[in-house]
Image 1 (cartoon, rainbow, N blue to C red):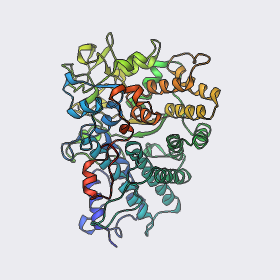
Image 2 (image 1 turned 90 degrees about the vertical axis):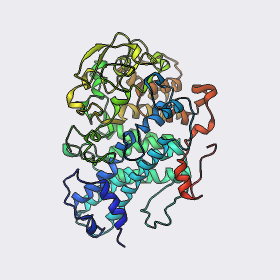
Image 3 (image 1 turned 90 degrees about the horizontal axis):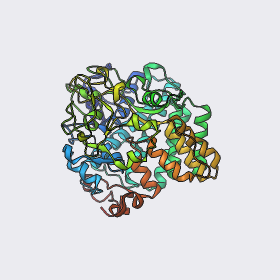
Image 4 (image 1 turned 30 degrees about the vertical axis):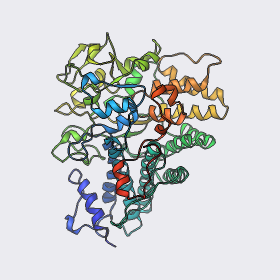
Length: 511
């Protein structure tokens, strides 16, 4: 059966940004496309590109304004929604744990996740048809599509607990609703897909294909998923395989501040510490294999990048004219030891030099620019505030989002080791992270569970992990006190999806 409708939608999203030899849309079917490796490349890049939209800004779809940051970082105790800077109402509400099924972030991220799943499923289904691929090419595309399908389902599981599991392209326009899956069903499918990806993906890619998932990306995610599942032996097996046989290592030359800056430098993307990055392009160019301008029309080239600095850089009248919507909390800043190099790399504070993007000026940082007296510096600072890393309108930058780093893997590994009683090995993993930050080893007899949780918070600050850790560790009431409600262990499914499903998809309890 010709799948014209599905392919029209796909081609609308994957339009003129890539050098694909496309047929006119009125002649595109599954029988005329999905033949060559180039065509499958275009389709798999489309699935990758859905990740970019997690952090997207758009006035053309749902009106997104960095929605994934709100549900993964702003909701945590690491951030404060800066009312003085005029942050949006949803940021203020989610910072106060006022969470509604009608809130835009859930609809936006749900759409992006299931768009990515759809695109991965289209690739997998198309691989079953006649094509010109070699056996190796077919296996590689299958591995990438299964990795991405697993990645997106894992994100959905983290957010909603029991969201739909979708493993085929839905073609009946009158029957598109999918019911909730159980956690066990989701874990089983995610891990099956990751294992298949591990066996089919290459160990590395050439420079022209940097950013594509490798077998070690899949294996690292297998370990992470098993931590969420609390299958500690399986997690340890996966992590030890990656550590022993993979290609990753900490950037650690003995110069803590420079090493940490190197991790997040725009000119050091896809470095040895990076397991998986969200890839972004450069100004007025299509120099990135993922980019298809999903969030904006072709004319708006800032969509090649990410609006990180637009939201995070100082507001409240600070030079450079950024929003300053979200500020580091005093509690987070106070958790860093004075000798911890991460504080200077991650946070602007009184006495620091602040670097603007308008003319790239260096100015004394003024704590009045933030309601807490602090501004996020991670991904910024002198190293990154340069013309090559900014769109001409100053609203986007092109530095990749480091989504999964080897430092996080080591801390997840430590967590699994603690659960299995291997305390000496766990302490070594934690100490590796501390030492790279310029800190000494943990004191003898330290509470390793607490040390692990503290270290993970400090190392991964402003990366999208803290909220999910609070939830899975069951420490919401400790962190948030009376504001916490156990229903927050999962977010609400978007009310629009509940309504559209006509009773097939059930809302999470309490929303």
